[in-house]
Image (cartoon, rainbow, N blue to C red; front, top):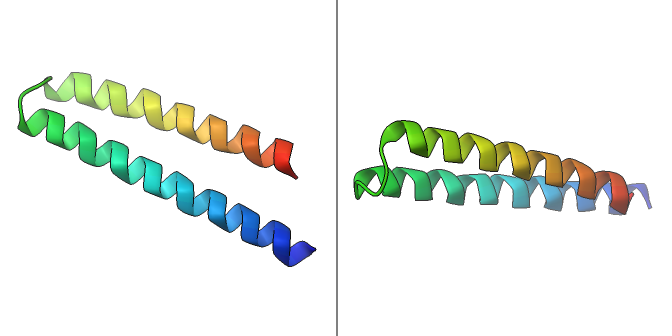
Length: 64
């Protein structure tokens, strides 16, 4: 049972890192293609990563 919960949190962490990596790549690609400037990309990435962190925290609390 404990291992199952641990495995679930590990999957959550992996998903979180995957999402953050994808978002970082997207913001870097946006800067490279001049869709938006660096500061806008930083702002978007920061807000989305904070949102993803809070969502993961909330999911972790509700699943356990």
